[in-house]
Length: 272
Length: 273
Ligand SMILES: Nc1ncnc2c1ncn2[C@@H]1O[C@H](COP(=O)(O)OP(=O)(O)OP(=O)(O)O)[C@@H](O)[C@H]1O
Ligand SMILES: [Mg+2]
Image 1 (cartoon, rainbow over the protein chains, first blue to last red):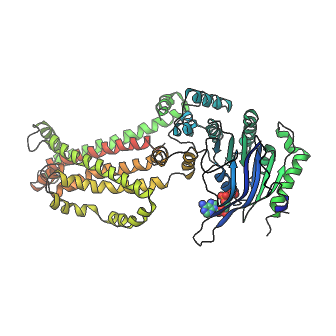
Image 2 (cartoon, chains in turn yellow, purple):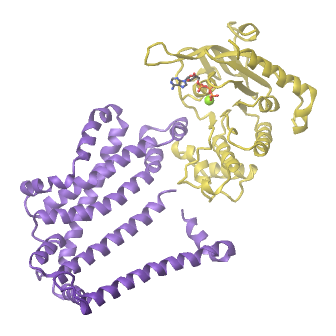
Image 3 (cartoon, protein in one colour):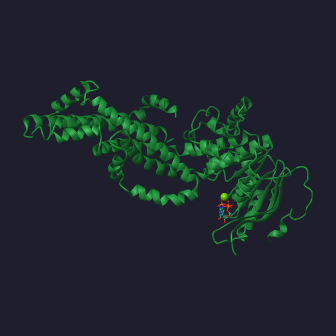
């Protein structure tokens, strides 16, 4: 069932113009004390096209965060190749925005200062950047909260500020590692719609890690299903649901068969 | 943080929040009542009871000492301004130097794990040593002047900051560091914009401790050997059974300690985010 269904392995086909990310035989082995190492990613190959919404699902420990950290340039890989726009990823890049699992706002900065933090570090705060931050805050409903401190905002509002921070640089690629895991179900649905709206307006490429199968089907063009020990990309599921997506689609038959199929893929790997 | 005052100012307008104020006021009144009762009992026992003035002096005698001590010229050997100044100066200098060294060394050790692992056993061992025990040694080495006392304060304020800055450094959330890294932050920027502000609550908890210790350490240093200072004055008055003077000095130390503690508490609250 595994390996064989992965569509874009081996073949050294030249990257088509609209391919943004290309991963070939990507392998990550974390060194361990006993010298054997942990194989967190094993021979992972895929392409992501410009403007695609990709979700990654998989059990805990299958290497989702590892893959995202390699993409964001925070972590070196052991073997294989990974490129963004044809260039190897070898460190953090302003073209890549990262949204963390917890909002990770700095409590001593106001929301505006937090959102401008990457620009402050890169020393490129301009009036235009400020304006962009302001209008992004407004589009996620944080108008008028710029001078507040993070602890004065709810969890959902904090996470929205975290998303704005990743967007201020206007990156091509947005990486999100379980960004809504800590939110209640209602807020989470709202945030999903919010993310889709931002994605549809800006046509950025988004790679979104989640534990929720429903969330992955609802948001994505394609769902990457990963399996653990060693971390492999078991299957890529194309989601052919119309856009824009609406919450009532979740109850449709097509939606149900997609999520059922992904659940089956994940369960198949459970009994070894 | 600037918003705090705004929230405070709007408090009385909110009827629900207002409920908490009377009880706080009552607690304050009770504290003040206890102070008054102590003064009353003290006055009663020493003036009309059987407690002799060389055991506990009557309050009026203590106030007499205070007024006299603060009125004589600064050059006078019994000037309380002078001795208070000397003790505070020793405590202050030692506090600044000891805290700065503690913070610098703490961050350095935390940043280089190898150094931390190699040196930490010594830190623990030295910390377990009651530092007042080395006060006589420092007086032998550095004499009866200011240096020895400042050094004692340095030694005693160093450790709370060393330990707290190491703890503060290690308590920084990994995600905050990753946030800085994805922005291509340099090591210096990570320290300046993430680690330092993140560890502020730890640093200020350490400074609070060190401020209180600094006064104690200066007095201990003066007990061991000094030419001036409240500790020296206390010993002299004690030896000559001038209890009014002893109590006057104790009162000054109490007030100083209280104010110091209060100020540090405010500072600490400010930096606890
Ligand atoms: N720094 C590290 N050193 C050693 N092993 C690690 C390290 N980080 C992760 N691992 C191991 O690599 C594997 C993949 O971890 P990763 O965090 O990528 O999983 P994940 O899919 O994100 O899991 P979760 O859903 O729980 O977040 C796990 O077995 C984990 O124990
Ligand atoms: Mg993870």
